[in-house]
Every structure is written in structure tokens, then in C-alpha cells.
Image 1 (cartoon, rainbow, N blue to C red):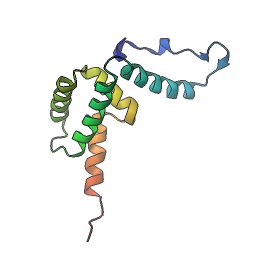
Image 2: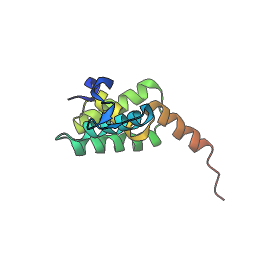
Image 3: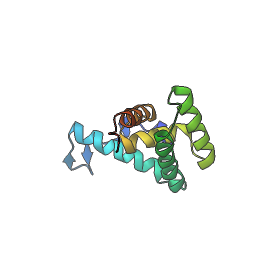
Image 4: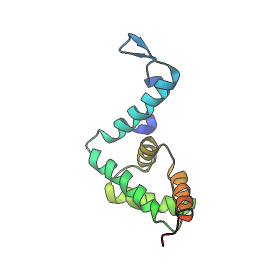
Length: 117
């Protein structure tokens, strides 16, 4: 099953029909469950490596606009043979940020690093 096909309807409001789960806990469980679903197929290592590569590529990226990030993601998807939507969703599930937001955060952090003497 592709991550893009997973809906909230697939998440139960109880654990094994016995224990009620709060809405907040369901959200956390759903995020982790979706990430695990993405990376549990035959391409588990490919997806995990692709997510790591995207994060490391974003850290040193000069172009952090939509087209720059899209180009990075397309290249990584071809290299690791993963679906772009699945890469995007696995990245969000792992880092709790979109690639765009992560790039902006990294850029901000680089600007505000204390200069070493």
C-alpha cells in the first residue's frame, strides 16, 4: 500500500478493540505507523537512505526554492528508486517538517551560528 492511499479511516480508535486511544495519541501513532508503512517494504533501506540523503542534501543546498527542492527530490527518487510522494511523506514522518520547512530552518540556523574565533 502506498502512503498516499492511507487515510484516517485506517486508524482505529481503539488498540486491539480493548483500550480507547485519545485523539492526540492517535495522531502520534498514525504518524509513526505511516512512516513504518512506507519503510517496511522491500525498499526499506532505499527509503530510509533516501530520506537521510534528502536531509543531508538540504543542509548544504544553495537553492531552497520550490524548484530547487523538487529537483533534488526527483534526483534522489531516481537514484534510490522510490516514489516522490512516498519520499515526501516519509521525510515528514521522520522529521515532522516538510523538506521546504527543513531547508528554511537549516538556512536560518546557518545564518545564526556563532562565529568561531
